[in-house]
Image (cartoon, rainbow, N blue to C red; front, side):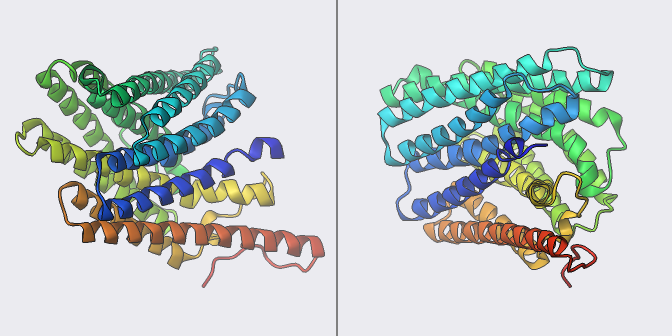
Length: 421
């Protein structure tokens, strides 16, 4: 793989860390002066900057890697990833500063970029796949890209509603949230992890039907809830219950895979375990939301925080500590390098990122349920410490890989890269 094809993945990985940093800074801002604009800024810093930006970059490799279909319009897709990053930053700043014109301008750029990216991806995977397995994966990717495009369009309508204070357009908020979190991010994560758990954990699913049950429930639940949200709470509730059932199937299967994990990368396994635990809590909150009355708004806020920063955010961090390390190391050492990720990392930093990350998520969830500002302070600081540990590990990976290359060039020998004691 050429250097030109390599530069995009590290860049969004850096962008994801920057947006994660921004999200925790917004939690600190909320501790001082809470506002609805800060809440919206936080949600989109996580959903768009931390998660979607990384997802779009990863798909540049996942689509050809999983389906054996080369991208059509690859250069355009890569450029659109950068546009999404810039648009997400503009949107977050506009929400935080309560700038209605900025919200609309950013939403227009984002919606266009995401819809065109989705169209390019669908055009790529719509060709005949080389085998049945690849065809199934291609169909799944088509669904997630369609949901992404619809979510982007709803986001634009909501931006207009936000600027014009239109109750009719703002009623689309729950539909946008469900499609974005469940239909796009969760469905994509479920599908990708079905392939990445083997290198990450050293084990695969023993329940062939689990993936189909989980994805079917997630997709059906998201679509039903999104269609019903503006008109019928009963229909919205039914969709949430179906989606929760799909998520629960994923949890059961993931726990079984974790129980049989064999890789010596303990921190990465712990990140996956934390992510799955947060998903289980999101399921519980969602079910509680369907039967609650006076607490429904707070439960909804908490479920969003748990799903974004807990379930999805920690799963991304798990992959950063394994597959992300592989991206960086092969960029330096070459595509044929087989250095194991855990040999390049500093364990103390990995475990530090894990511990502080969970404190940050828990504190932010508590704040969404009405905890005092001091809890937000603790959550924001813990989140920044977690990012700091991840960045420190990234620097360590680059330093160790570069040192290994230097030793090879000078002929100083050595048995390669070894784990720190």
